[in-house]
Length: 308
Image 1: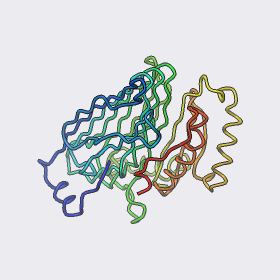
Image 2 (image 1 turned 45 degrees about the vertical axis):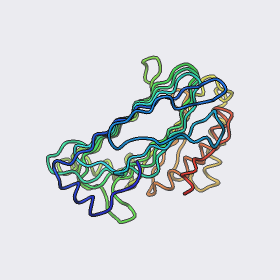
Image 3 (image 1 turned 90 degrees about the horizontal axis):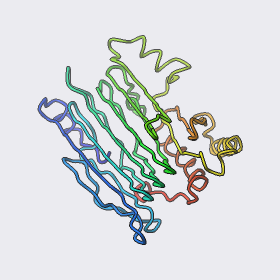
């Protein structure tokens, strides 16, 4: 989620069977009268933490950067984030850099990252972690659950890069599972699962996933952006108009070949398939600039760290 280890440190970590990082972070954001949104709980164990919220938009919206100094996960590592936004709170969460899932040791345990995000009544969460880079022969799982309550709103993205496309390195062997769930009143509203099985064993499955027209089409970067819900919004009955507007914006910026727009249970969903995590973020940020005013009547304000 933050700064990457240097090459010597990566080799030391990935070859040492006793080197594990276990980290937990528990955050609560509260709306406190005229003081706006405040970080009222900040508890951590291990190398996963936040320093302080920033307020580039004023007191009502807290911008927070998740810091993970190791910069990646090796075999046996586990990161757990529990985040709650109390009634009326508004938080934007991002990370300084990509999360790297390094090559696993042979017969080693999983590399896991788990996030549990809860939004109370009228809360707003903007959840924008940088991409996850899954190295060849990684053995990793990403698991995200978002729980909504009455009139809460979510903007979020998930971007995954298989291998290192810039170096011509693909994901030839390993295991990866990505689970993403948004629920409300114990009912699932959006579920996205991706499983890349042990590729050295299931070569045909790998070929189907990464090469087929219905799969990755030989692209190594995929992701989705989600905004909603539009259930009681002015656009709830005008989705076709909004969809055409979004497609027009994407076409103007040459994203019409890599990003598609669909709707699922009052959520606007954009999906990216291509070769660049940077381009995925750029396209999703463009949509966020358009959808944020439509959903919560606020102009988009990019975190300062995105500009560094």
